[in-house]
Image 1 (cartoon, rainbow, N blue to C red):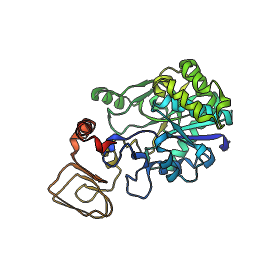
Image 2: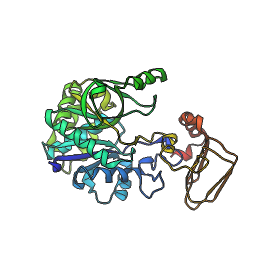
Image 3: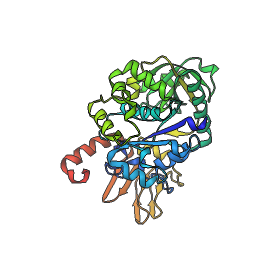
Image 4: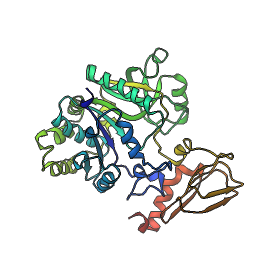
Length: 362
């Protein structure tokens, strides 16, 4: 039943690779990076309303972001905003959400989604999610969405599956293994083989199934969060959860469960997808002018410039001349002019700047 579907949106990351728009105070999931009047988390919420009623949508976020979530998603109650006092990766967050919802509805099926993905074909996404839900409910499976790769990308983990020639997009098949981010040569082999898809980080499973898996593979984590279900949905919940986060291990759900479990499946997805991990990944989804420039901001004027990404405030007038392959972003009192080929160095640059000017990173 649709009312047994619960969506968990993970929105606790800091999105440092989207600096200077994304900051620790307001990371990228709360930003309108496309310039369309909606933040990424608002787009995610609207997309998941096609799968579950609004009262069954929960946000997992850092305590510092609870007020931003409520501001951007006013239809949510505070009970639907689950806060973590410390960042301890995805496994503790998912254990928390699964235990809380299990205490409410033992038949719940959970759809776990990051808050900062861009998915263009939303109807196709809903069809793929429906296939995953059916599989998760049939045989207590742990289901993930695999994204058909468009290039040999070294920035994603991969999912290996069998019988590539016999499985079509939208169908479900068993996972052979999860593979970590490869080097370029290995990534080329993966894509050419045809039976490796990108790991999207979107999961579907019953609350009971994931809690059973945590009990098998991470008993300490399970016992912390699910050892006392009666603590949830009460006035003592936050105190109980804060203690769990204080004591739990920092570990991802991939390491904690998915790489160990044998009851894992993948739905082969073919909707347009990006995890928007970098400005470059965003650029592929923006409209280009005749010189292949992407511009967000109505008063940016480019001359003798090609292959640039420009993101500026709507009220800012900007003239750019003679630039090729640059990323130019202004936000608040910060400006970045970065050669596109050096985008992978951004974190290193920011660490250097933070050491010299820590007041900008408070």
